[in-house]
Image 1 (tube, rainbow, N blue to C red):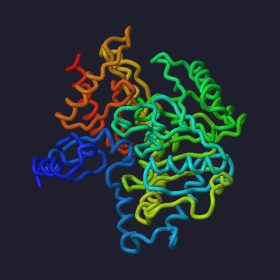
Image 2 (image 1 turned 90 degrees about the horizontal axis):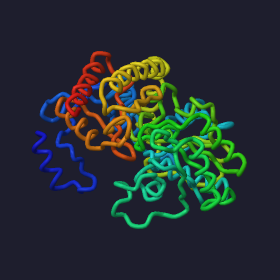
Image 3 (image 1 turned 120 degrees about the vertical axis):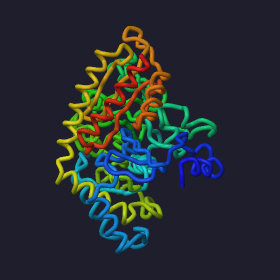
Image 4 (image 1 turned 90 degrees about the vertical axis):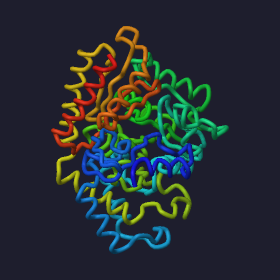
Length: 424
């Protein structure tokens, strides 16, 4: 079917709130390239929103999933467990930098991982409250919507949010929130809204995802660790977008040396197959009662096979080395853009988790979401998938596969550069 025919079906049968505004429909893809239903080629700098760190349809992952489908598709692991689940749990326990011996629960999505992390924290501490941060994004289920640090579009039209969620500032000096101010705000939240004795967990993205690709300084993360230790609060790190090589290390928290009590992960964990994980210190993970955690499809055999294959690819293909080199390449190009274009400012990266800010000028730093919209639109017209994000909608984020070929990367960056020239 053509894009036009598929668009007509979408408009008739897909709920408006779930329908993409994009009128192109993906047909097939490989690594960092995608072709739509009409045969138009697109370079992919979005990676399914950070899901494809090792590219579309990595051959080793495809082979692993096909092999699993020949053996077993589903039993529900709480009814009849299978090898992939426990092998993946063993692997994740070994690589996740949490305190002590780690245990694992597998789920289907990032939001589901966060929901279960909160359940586990409540069971482990006997407390109800959680503290999250401005600009944070944790999902679209009801409780994770309450945890998000940005209301629109996630909370729009859905009525009152669940209680027991409180918020603190995230350090973004460019927008006037210093690290000291963020720490002061966190301590004030604990005085005014959620005292330590009532707080089960402090939940933070070490690099904001939807909130704009801002990194928390290692000293800030260390201060949170100390606050959690002082009050018996669990520190939960949300690595759904920043994990699996996106920042040059397997997990972004490793840049700080901080060991959280629990981590959530998903997205690039299985190169496109739906799976997520909660990994935490064993005594916390074991705190809830029998059959208290799970779900019909959690940790499905095919998704586990994909995730195990992804971990093999990381070991065999030097993905973390490629990630670091990609980050260096992006930063050099971004520095040139910041020097060349009056509306490009605050270029930043932690590995290839990289972004630029579009502003009226570098003195006022006034965010220009319309510039960001114009750039992504122009790039799409010229064959590049690119995403904006941020509290002000003026950040352009880069989530191309770490495995992108040099010539495809150069072509895509050239498309972005041309778009920046045209909005100048």
